[in-house]
Length: 340
Image (cartoon, rainbow, N blue to C red; front, side, top):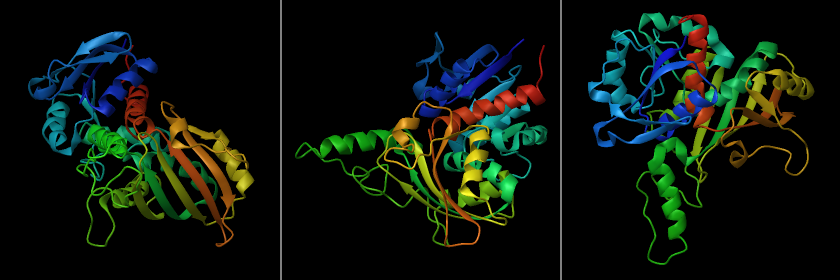
């Protein structure tokens, strides 16, 4: 016996990936509905070998549906998530709206799967920020062994994290570089993204950090351990899909790089590719379409007493968003919404 599943925002990058991954992982679906805003109403989307026609999110009745995967942004979520939750449908939300709500669990299944049981307070579960999700998958098994004191992370985030508009802007600007008179001015991003990097994602805060950087701090504390100190610099790079992170970790106890490598090889959701030779590491273009969080460049940091450096890469549309949401749905089915 399967579930009645809704995907809201089915025409966007993340919504389409949610449908793909539900089909790929053979999630037990009895009935599925693809929802979109009125401007996208009637658009066809794929679900395995089936074609679905989108329905109107505004008028959809969530009564009798089991799980709704939301990929519609915070503003729309504020309107429609409570509506779905009141109708008895459990919402798994990809926006930032509920991530910091103490009554809403923030879940990465490889890290804190049991937290899903807290969904009953509001009938909502939050999906973390894309850059946080891949980082905590790599941090948690190391934290369990040697307890992390402090993390310094620099991200290299692809334009797909800014949606279709971000991807289009990189493509158009890149083409425009080779056609005189066809240059494309920045619109989605603050500065030219083609052949450039931009140390600015989301809005600036009073302390000089950006909200994206703040998200990584707050979410790591909520998902892994509130005692971990985190400082982040988040950078947009001219890559279409795949986020990368250079992470420096300081532990309470000494952790040898070889032991860390062995721990990560056994960790759920992690794939270690770490050869000390040219090409012996993973780059964003190689992770596209994959479920794994890849870890490379594992090495001791000799400048502090108990330190390691690692390089972490993942498909941000998958593990950073759609895959994590589907994994939450799987855990929810196993632990709470059991059928059959």
